[in-house]
Length: 419
Image (cartoon, rainbow, N blue to C red; front, side, top):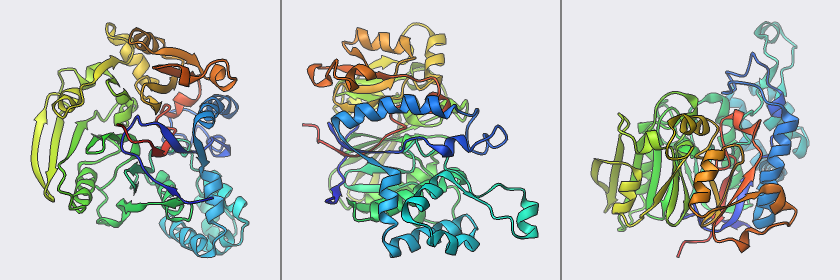
């Protein structure tokens, strides 16, 4: 296929291409004993999770070009130099250099699967036996959340430096994918900036592109202030005379549902956003900071009221829609916990979400959004192009237990620009 030009200048422009990873055996290769290390609070039922995921996959496949991690990975592994580079990095990073030759000899499709689903340890020495580890390379339990390991910003692919080592291989794989012949883009690799500084980390769930000149970034358990400073320093290197804005939202360190900014704030339309009201609009200790970049330097840093207020000052007047409804904090907290604020846009005003968050959906209905079933869309009973505003709902009993929603499970590579 021809190389894909990356272009994402907003959260809501009509989607032209997206990277997905269908949850597979790696999710089932987790036990209650390894769940915490895998960043899960529970283990999932894979067969149910896959049925739910097929709704997301089916809707996206109907309206845009879908690229799959495993297929992209298998394709690039056909190139010996790319294979050698990636396997070398993984073996050094995960301290399994003795597996390099074995991995290099695997067929590309099998190697791609092994890098995702895990490589069992070979018990051929006393050291290996006493480690009591089943895997030499652990499964990538979280990879169906393709949002986190990389971010498309304009024509740039930001390769994230993940907060937890168990997810580091995801970013190495995404780097290899974006460096391959499949994509045409600039690479910003967070691993290249001060590699010895363990305090530099960021994940894609914390980075939202409000407009081509406005980034929203969450500062919490997965994205550090040092990581944000690193990204800002890289943006300043563009030497653009155009003023740019970074709006940073501090996030609580617990509970785990506040893991990323997109769990409390996402964009729905040119004039609508979804938010978790107690945190984003409430009177609390979590600051919102507006950073202005101009002339190759930081020209201003100041605290502001909240994200919608800051965006309004910049010409983006967004009507907030409350996750869980606008009246009952109990409902707000319950539905935020199950990714009720985590929406993904197919186009302006046309978004994907879980069906389980009924109070959130009722609030959207009041705001003029038609509520559509994913299966009805997939089977042709309704067409999102016939609606000005709509929410396509997918079943979510197992997928949300992994800790994310529709935005978390999607990595857009191309959108139309907003006019």
